Image (cartoon, rainbow, N blue to C red; front, top):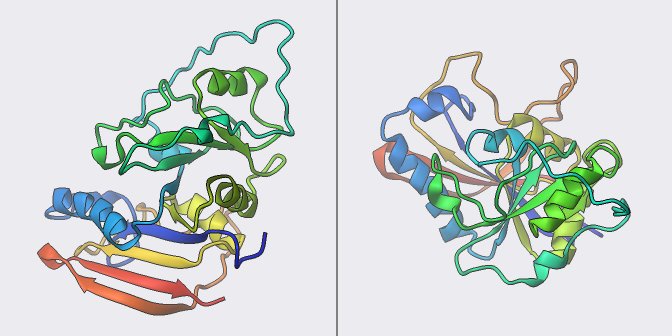
Amino acid sequence: MSNQTRAKVVCHMMVTLDGKINGEAYNCDNYEYFGKTYYDVEVRHFPASKVCIIGRKSNEGGIETVTDLPPLPEGTVISREEDFIVPFEEPLEDGTHWNCIVDPRGVFAPKDRILKMDSFPYYDGDRIVSVVTQKQPSDVFLYYLQQKKIPYIFAGDEKLDCAVAVEKLSRYLNEKIIMLHGGPTLNGSFLKDGVIDELSLLQVPIQSNNPADLPLFTSMKEDEILPPLQLNLLACESLQHSGLWLHYEVKK
């Protein structure tokens, strides 16, 4: 699928002045306001988007999961060539999204197919999708998702292929805009694969200065330096409590 026909990917994140996405970002004054505004900005400026992508680690502790999965019934065959997309035929409730959890190894088994996260409730009601690789998840895990009517797509053989994930979600769901809410390594993977088209940054008025806080992008390899991003400013909006929304286009 060409860049012209796949969905546009917008990396939508909350950041400190020095580009950190956790730690002190959550300790800023008026964080409750900024958390709600993060969601409101997405809905207001990207209303056509019904698909968001998020990493497994970002959901750990927030979404109830199952660790002891039921055994695979004898004689059950799980295909590694076909994505499980039957649940996509059921339309979304108004105001909700397909919330795609990137889980290459297939270890994150939600208890329910409907998202509910007490710590960040703004996306409650979204339908969960699992993005996995072909070889790493067990048959037991994939069968569990099928029984829970949680769709899954294969994106890569043993390693996540971000471009394949975007292409499949664009095609299966006829999407024009996909929102990326990743952690630093997931964002870095999308950056490395060249499938981030825009940045939407809600900048909170705090300077982290904490080297332990995570950056917007990082590589999974310690010695790898990600390519720089050249940007065009598309929009800028002042928010309450000295916040700022910045919308950039990535120069290709």
